[in-house]
Length: 366
Image (cartoon, rainbow, N blue to C red; front, side):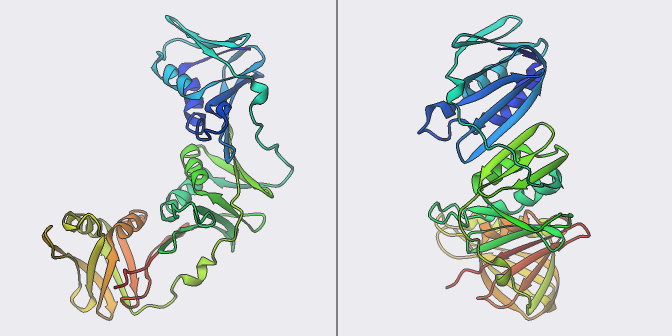
């Protein structure tokens, strides 16, 4: 094989595929990236058997062929090469030579025939969606997914096309984040995407235009003009999370999001290492929310924020990290909070003409 392209194009392709390589240590060949030339393009493929990434780099093909070389070494080498001259990749028997003006390196190639194949495309109709919407939906929710490997059904992000929109949600049973986007779909379908796959989709498809999502029986594919991701699906039933989102409340507040976030970060200075507890005292009639961290050898802190609110006074104990992570994904200046008692779930919401966001978090029970 022989192929020539720019340093920028090659580095982009390796940057997209290399992070997947090496995750599965049981199969040494998966530490490599598979390179294949065809029709003046270089196709780069990597997989860990849970997720696979295939990307296409344009250039000039001298000879068709394939090789499988260390993804880590290739990335680190190409990253240091100058952008001013084209790079040539040439395979001679089991050696791959990667060179440009003033630089030459030789890589050992594994047998490309031993590299696992990604699932073949089927005739199933896909769903086309803006990459901006898809990535924002996933990035706004995946932080709430559990990290416990013993609970794979919620160590995931669920994507559901229904009721005229895309609903993306994640939970760890203590909190729930859901992003809803108004986007057309030819059918109703849900996929349960592993957490690591969701992270890669959000990373790889940022600002690439439209993405076609195609669900299959055991896997799902995401495809744009130059990159394709396939991921296995989680084998399990996702909790019916809609039932736990409160529909009533006794207290409603509106607070400046940045001021609320700054207040929480400020008093977090006084938190003990083993505690994330912050006390919120909400007084709608006085137009004030007070956040406190008190007592102990670390000292104590108190911050007051102005609010607009209606309903009952309420005192509630919350996990400050959960609060900060949730409100960070509420776009706009104002954060809407809904409370129903010190033992009931707290809801934060945002609405617009194009999308909606809801974050539900349980208070700390004492």
